[in-house]
Length: 551
Image (cartoon, rainbow, N blue to C red; front, side, top):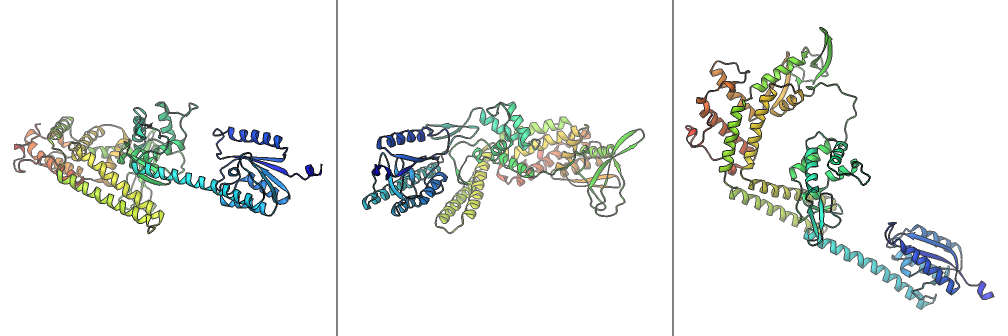
């Protein structure tokens, strides 16, 4: 009877390695069943049970620490667990258990699958068991990390494919989804226009069928995460570092950068009251004092009118008010000075199409220069990685410089691909400019004030208001167009504000062709693609011998 009373009481401890409620959920239940059955067979008295779902690779388990604290306050207690690796997989917790065994705070350790007794041999075997558990964890981590590094070197995706992609188990990477990838590209294009917020874009995606599992639009955080995901550029992210992937990107670098600029601009929006509809505020500055031009309502003559005036924030100013309809008429007159009729623009577009068909493929020299720069960037990237491995570069500087080099490498790749598309390095800007000329003609006769303001900001600079008169300078190549049309109109004694292009006759075609060649060369210079410029005309003195615009 006395021997029974001297038997120690035990704390039962059961643990599983994951904190996920759905993963390994039966592990603790199975341990509890086996341990209770073992205690019944061996006549072991259980004082208290402790269960937790947490990894033992690092110290800091709450239930384990609570149990060890109770053991330290009591004498002659034991621990009942399934295996020593349930108690510890790190040297701190393992050493703590062994120390309490040495001080006889723990007088017994019982394991259904492991033998132990508090003798030198038993303590040695316990240390071996703890060491083996730690070795298993460390070796498992190292094997996993080695596999991840190998996947990154091969450009394989590591986890579940992001939205817009689908996992391919055969190639062990991801591929663009036939429909969802197009939705992602469409979402980026819409947001790049600058008219969407995160909420409106989530509603736009909901209209395309992209919703949560509860049939509601995506949260703003989810939309923001999608818009900043560089996987759509063909990158693989791992621990804050980006690697080249061997899967097809969904987006172009230009579209992605445009979206990032808009996100950056909208990151801290100003809180303002409800604004009035003054379409031309923010366009002009006062020519006298340099202050901004603001707007206000005024009542008179039986109606309400909108006036624009100087804010006078930089001091006194003698400039007077200008009514909005007079401001609009002046802006329209300026747009007419660079407007061409539809007949001219259509023939210009046909000539561009003819050049596009005759344009030879990319210049070998230009391609070689791109490939040389690509090789240099790759060499710099390899050198940077070697320097970082040697410990000569801090991690923060390494990550920043690596991202810069990878973005430059991607930009060169995109530039090379764009160059391979027949003549688009100069054809597309020229076509876009001619379409803008068509737009100028429409706006000069319309009443879309918002579009007029945006167009004037695009084609002009230094917009000022002085003595109730609007003035601004045209950007290139609009300044060439305005000067040419004005000179032709003044040479014929016509007023330059009445769309002089409508009054040009067919004998002026040769002069206009020379001017168009000048525009093309300026466009080619700005895009740094001189090799891809259109076929030169057969001498500027007789330009119509090889190409002519047949008006």
